[in-house]
Length: 418
Length: 159
Ligand SMILES: Cc1cc2nc3c(=O)[nH]c(=O)nc-3n(C[C@H](O)[C@H](O)[C@H](O)COP(=O)(O)OP(=O)(O)OC[C@H]3O[C@@H](n4cnc5c(N)ncnc54)[C@H](O)[C@@H]3O)c2cc1C
Ligand code: SF4
Image (tube, rainbow over all chains, first blue to last red):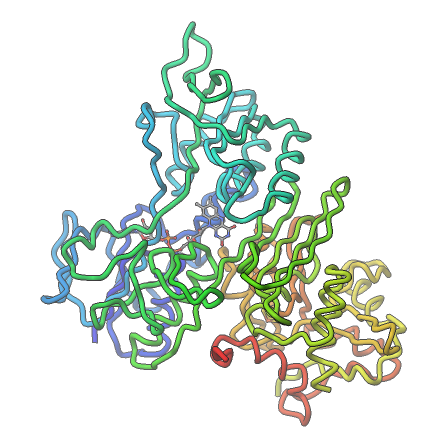
C-alpha cells in the first residue's frame, strides 16, 4: 500500500506520522514544495519578533524525525492529479503513483485586485520566505502599512511593533477582526491599538501602491477615504483561500475547498483531504465550511490518516475557534459567536478594563462565545460547545453573570455526575 | 503502573492548601493565583471542587501545539510544557476542552499540571484526602474521565 500526502504542513506531517504508526508496513511519501524542513506558519509571528530563530518554527525538532520514521520525502510541486490513473505530475520531477492520496496543501493568501502588489517591499505574511522578506524591510523606524486587520494581520502586529516600526493598519471592514469579533470587541481592539501608538483606519480601502515621491519612502498608497499613506514596507494580509489550483481536471469536487464527507474522503474514493484545504462539516451549523486553523489541521490530518489505513473514523466536524493576542490584548472566539435564530445572548462589557464576554445559547446549550482580556480556563467554552452539554439551571446563572463559566461547567458536569 | 490524580470533591473543605502547595512547587511563592490546580466554590451549595488537568491520552493541547512544545512524560503520563519551545501562541488554551492549560502573561508561556514529576504537591498537601494520587487502573478513577471523555473526538457523537 502506498500512501502519498501532498503538503508538508501540520496536517500533512500529522497524517504521515499517524499512517506510519498505524500501518508500519505501508509506504508513506510526503510531497511538499517549500524549500524548508516542515514548519509551522503559526510560529512566524514569533520569528518576526525575534523570540525564536527559524529552527524554532520547525514542526518537529529532530531534523531526522521523518527519515527515522521511514517516511519518503519529495521536495517538489504537484501540478496535476490524475485520479483515474492514480498518478501525480510533479514540477521538474518524475510522476508519482499512489494507492491512497491525501490533499493537505493548505491555503494561499488572497491577492486583492490592486495595482502595484508585485514588487519587492510588498509581501504577504504566509510563508517563512515571506517572513524573511518582512524582516529585511521592517527596519526600526521604517514605515510599515498592514493591509488587512483580520486574524493574521492582528497576530503579526505585535511582532511588527516589537521591531520598532511605525505601523499603520488599513482595514476594509468597519472594525478589527470582523470575521472573529463582534462590533463591541472589534472596536475595543481598535481602541487598544490606537492607545499603543498604531494608526488604524477601518472602513478604508487601499486603491493602489505607487513608488514614493521625492526620495522619501519607497511607496505611497492611495487610499479611500483617507489621505495617501507613505510606506517602506507593505504587508498584505487580506485573507486566505484553500490551495486547490493543481486539482483542475482531477474530477475532485471543489467548493470553497476540497469537499469531503464525514470520513474526510473527497468525491473521488481513495483521495482524502485535511487541514486548510478541506471543506468539511461545521458541526455547529451543519453546513459545510473551511476552518483554516491549526487545531483543525492537526485533528483532520490524524483522522484522515486513520481512514486511509482502513480504520473508519468519523470526523464529527470542526468549528471556528481562534485566540488572538493583539499587542497584549487577548481575544478568543468560538463557534457561532454571532448567535442563532431563536437563541439567547448575554454579554458583559467593561470598556475601561478592556474586558468582555459574550455567550450565545440555543435552548440551554452553549453554541458560541467571545472573550476579551480573559486567559483562565477559556478552553471550557470549547468543551461546553462541543459536547452540547445541557446546562439546565446553570444557563440561568450564566444569563445573570456570564463570567461564571467555570462554575456552570463544573456544576453541570461534576454535580450531576457525582 | 501509572498513577493519576483522583479528586473527591465531597471531601474538599476549600482550605486551598493544594493551591498553595502547587504555586510554591512551581513558582516558589505561596500564591493561589499562580496554582495549576484550582478549587471552585459553590457558595449556595457550600461545596468545593478542586480541578486540574486529567492528562488525557490523545491530549488536545499536545496535538494542537505548532512547535512540539508539549510532550508526554513516559514515566508519569503527564503532558509537559517545554518552556524553551513554547512561543506563547495560546492555541492549546483554546483547544483543551477542559480549560486546564492556561496562558501566563508574565512569562509569555502556558502552564499546566505536570504531576510534579510523579509526586504531586497538591495531593501531599491535602489534609482531607480530597486529592489522592492513585493507580490509574484503580477503582473509581474514571470519575474525572467520565466528563473528560464526553469531549473526546471519538466519543463526542453527534447526539
Ligand atoms: C502568520 C500566521 C499566523 C497564524 N496564526 C495562527 C494561530 O494563531 N492559530 C491558528 O489556529 N492558526 C494560525 N495560522 C493558520 C495556520 O498556520 C494554518 O491553519 C495551518 O498552517 C494549516 O495547516 P495545513 O497543514 O493545512 O496547511 P499549511 O501549513 O499551509 O501547509 C501546506 C503545505 O503544502 C504545500 N503545498 C501547497 N500546494 C502544493 C502543491 N501543489 N504541491 C506540493 N506542496 C504544496 C504548501 O507550500 C505548504 O507547505 C497562522 C498562519 C499564519 C501565516
Ligand atoms: S491540558 Fe487539556 S488537553 Fe492537555 S492533557 Fe490536560 S486535559 Fe488534556
